[in-house]
Amino acid sequence: MVLLGGAGFIACTVNDASESGGFVGPADPTPEPPRGDGVGSSGAGTGAGGGSDALADPPVPSPGEDAGAPAAFTCEGLDSSHPVVLYVSSDDSNSMSSPVHARELLRAGVAPEPWQVRTYEFLNYYRIDYAAPDEGELRVEPQIEPGEEAGTYTLQIGVRAFDPPAPRRPIAVTFVLDTSGSMEGEPMERERATVRAVAASLSEGDVVNMVTWNTANSVILSGHVVGGPDDPALLAAADALSASGGTDLENGLRVGYQLAQEHYEEGRINRVILVSDGGANVGITSADLIARHAEDADKEAIYLVGVGTGPAVGYNDGLMDTVTDKGRGAYVYLDDVEEAFHMFRDRFDEVMEVAARGVQVELTLPWYFKMEKFYGEEYSTDPQEIEPQHLAPGDAMIFNQLVRGCDPGVIDDADALTVRARWQTPLAHEPREASHEATLAELVAGSKEQLVKGKAIVAYAEALKSSSPEALRAAREQALAANPGGDPELDEIAALIALHPLY
Image (cartoon, rainbow, N blue to C red; front, top):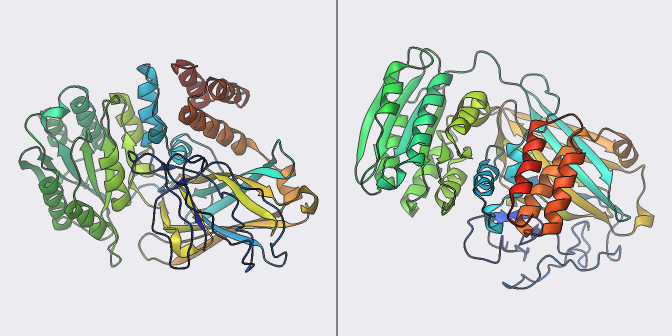
């Protein structure tokens, strides 16, 4: 098995190396970030079907070493009878905090730190539109473009869920709200806006629980059945929120999950929404509590949605990044009140619902290819090393990567590339599968509409990491060139790059 990661090219959640000696690189040489984008394959021959030379593991780079300098990749030792089979993950497709946090920093004239930029979350947040499949299905769509260097290709895979059905399922929402003194001002306004935005999206018969926490915790609502959108009791609870005291996240979460369990109903969407400025620390007990509820296999889990309120300068997203990773739910960041309505009204189903559980994406490449750069969270030749992720209705998992052939002369346009997605239905846990197979020639000649936007988003995120004036200028030019039709998101990206202090 080869599980690859480190600082510079691909994003990887740090795990222990497997007993078989698989290499796991650091997500970043600095100790600050909980997770982040890292390096690619470092020259390891992931394309071998059993050749020991090709599967030789590179050493783990020490902090300060150039982990982004891959060794020469040749065809020697590769087995031409075995294709390259990789399993890829982009973290939960609902994790979208990093680009919004970066946006607030840039608008304040502050350059984001490299560890604050998670490229795969930029691909999650900005909308790359793929055609929707039939209800209950997923659509798999690869697109490919030859790179500037011979033998390299940019490959983007979209795994698109069906559109949200109407009406949606009933929902039970449990708010766990930080009301500590540090929430005074903008964070509290954003927290109130979160409650109001959710209130606008609820339907008659939905259930709301609410607990606030600072030094102590208070149950504000328990089993409250709303009469419809903008329920007066829920809006009044939002208006009454105020900040004071210290933090007791542990007890706030404990009471929140107790309320969620008490009012759990099979068939409902069941969500805990934790809102905080990130100032509290999450302990072992909290992490285990979240994981236990999120991973309950006997019924639809009570997933946790994390909402970071900032303010951006000094914001440490370690709390939300940890709890949402354990809680298997969305992680969003609010840079203003309007963003709360954007996420919890306009994108409510995407943030709160699940269309496909445990999505596993398998990429099969011709034997001569390797993963050069990967802008998801992690990839591996061993499916057991990659945790399947959930996908929301109307949402898409986006995998953007650069693949390299061991020798441009051996690449055959008639060879096939296959992408396969496996998942389970949300309630019955029935196994499903979708796939797309095409030759390199067919893909090169095919549409690149989504790939072009994906490349511009990746260039933006990677330029923020580098803080290089040249990279920033190139990323802005790419965003402008990718936007002949006036895409407002690409307009925003170009404008934000121009605000960077080093632009």
